[in-house]
Length: 143
Image (cartoon, rainbow, N blue to C red; front, side, top):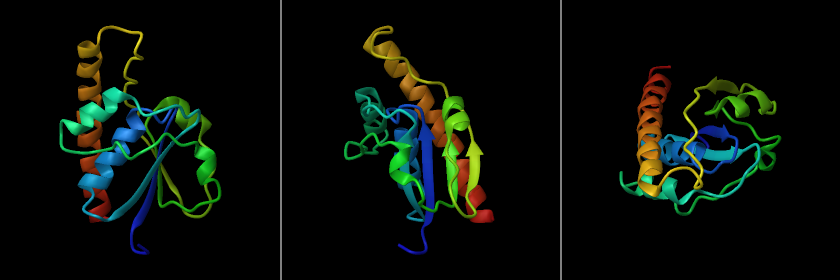
């Protein structure tokens, strides 16, 4: 556990983007990362995020929405913000934390459109996150 690279992924609600990013990095990272995700104003993990991830063979059903406050004072090698609001509101973390920002579209809330139209957006955002995380993993391996 000591050799793992500690990564915290932040977004506003910790309900979709950061949850999917956490699952992807944990799954695709080859066991090199200890990954957590949190939100500035946490809510719950969206069912659409669970389904979108299940479709690519990644189970995030054991993850829960957490507040960034749970991680205050903890050391992370990287803090990745996946939305502009989290970037602006991100607290300062101690030590040599590298902050990275990559904004992804916020999937629509349940009140917008029908389930299938929302799922199409969740799938697109999931795929964009996975592609970006692949680059992050490669960059880490080169560094």
